[in-house]
Length: 438
Image 1 (tube, rainbow, N blue to C red):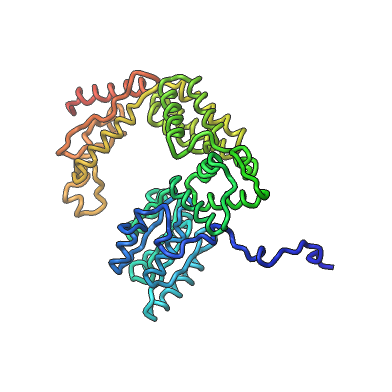
Image 2 (cartoon, rainbow, N blue to C red):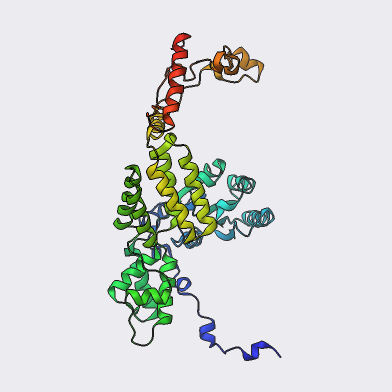
């Protein structure tokens, strides 16, 4: 006998009920909230549509900001066929099918907007496969990613697509979503004012999340019941944040943590780290900040600082919470007690400025390779001295462009391991003077 006979009967109207986030999905660009710089009257996408010419784009932003919805609406506004795939579930064979279908449509006079979710998950070869069909106009690519495109996407793909940034919802746009939800549900959300603000903070800028949380509240509420902050946390089984991760509380505490580490106070640093754990801060965010402190404030005074911070981040990912938090605490204490130096950080900033100011200068000819006869005739590699063949394995040649001359960006401090680096630099400088290279 089938088990279905004993399953509870669900009313058809309930079984067919779509999630609130789906029912509130915007039907026009005018209904899109939270992205006025893109979809507002003077937004970038509005201008593209008005011009009658859409180019390929990469939508970069956190979850729940409307990337998929905007792509779909964009195809409708521009009269394009809409195709959607996910890089998580698709491979080369799937891409070929989509490209062939788009080519057939193009022969019929209609272009295709191909929306690729999680595009950063495609490997280099898969990303390269988009290039020919983008260049010949078979598709207009709209890729969505939560990761920084500069690091995750091929340069060739980025050169053919414009990156548009989607921003997290602020409290005002999330509150507007809740009002629209109450209109659709034809009933108020059973929360007092403080709990309502807490729910907005729980969503952390995610429009889909705020509507899902609202649904949970409506399902849990008995007739006439109104939840306070404590009741809300119990209903949605999510801790109410002690501070708003997008506002002053977040930045004040992370600033205090960073300055305590820089000031070599392990007790204060550990205190602020634990306050952020207790507030519900993402531990991986804290792991990333510790890595930043290692390279900015400790640098080469203790090269192990970066290694330890990365290991702590990996340990947290392996152990999870709360056990993994101890690894981050260890890294925090290590950073606070390590010798401090911002010499590498300052050297990097100086080098960046120099690179921008002198970016057109060619390296000196003697350090350029000469794989062809023509390049040898042009003087490439002429006069280069192989350091390993020189006394002390050091030639002392000048490697900067001739018009710049030798520059000094890095000035190690007399603390920690950088004291040893200072000795090496002084020794090499002395050898240059003795050999007439300075």
